[in-house]
Amino acid sequence: MRHLMSPVDFTVEELDEILELAGKIEKNPEKYAHVCDGKKLATCFYEPSTRTRLSFEAAMMNLGGNVIGFSSAASSSAAKGESVADTIRMISCYADICAMRHPKEGAPLVASMHSSIPVINAGDGGHQHPTQTITDLLTIKSLKGRLGDLTIGLCGDLKFGRTVHSLIKALSRYENVRFVLISPEELRIPGYIREEVLEANNMEYKEVVRLEEVMPELDLLYMTRVQRERFFNEEDYVRMKDFYILDKKKMELAKEDMLVLHPLPRVNEISVEVDDDPRAVYFKQVQYGVYARMALILTLLEIKVD
Image: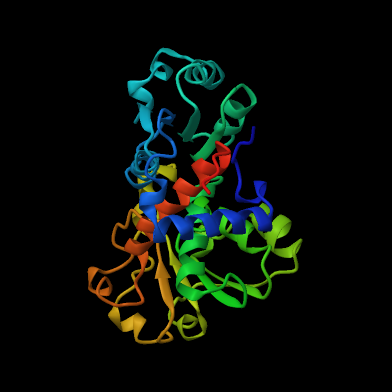
């Protein structure tokens, strides 16, 4: 039995197999419509989510399975003081696989240590978001045709953005990937990502404040929102939230084939006028997320489809 806590829990070869399976599902979804008949996914979400929770539920239902779970800590026995360890022991009696989101870093890992079913980290605090990373990799590979030889701009909240942390870790294993880290001083990537991932893997990277000055060199721009829920006070959030806004004027500086990704939800960091630009692929990214999670569920449940 395997769990997924970090995108590097899988080897590059295993990740490639998951991406290949997701591509097959995209091309022939009917073939996979009943492969999880009788199986149950538990979605244990201790903090709010729209895309990730509904994407997991859609993925399991597309495979013919059923879904149980809760959408906030307040609607679970956590409100009564039940521990994560006890919750997963109980969930293991009801379901075949669990997707867990939690505001505390490491909570899904604790769950996996007490679980008798596979546990998927669906986001833990500002730490990791591996299924979003698999979604991002699938989007990039499907639309760019490769995961190496890319200059990737990561823009916005790089300090608390768990999607960014997971993506850097995953892409550090591919060749000729160069990162441009675009953020205000206060929201730069954590030191452990810089030292343990970028520098430890001899990754080429630079840190800049202005988005405009690097737009022409990017193959991909990964925008993120400034996350109100990660700030300790409202003043800091208000000061940072409008630091970057991607609009048509900035898009004119970019390559004709540059792609704009965003893990969503968007607040105001991407102007709605950009939505009609063919390079804006963040809603396609949402659809790829369903295929990626379908492939992941099949992999962790060890279900093979001839």
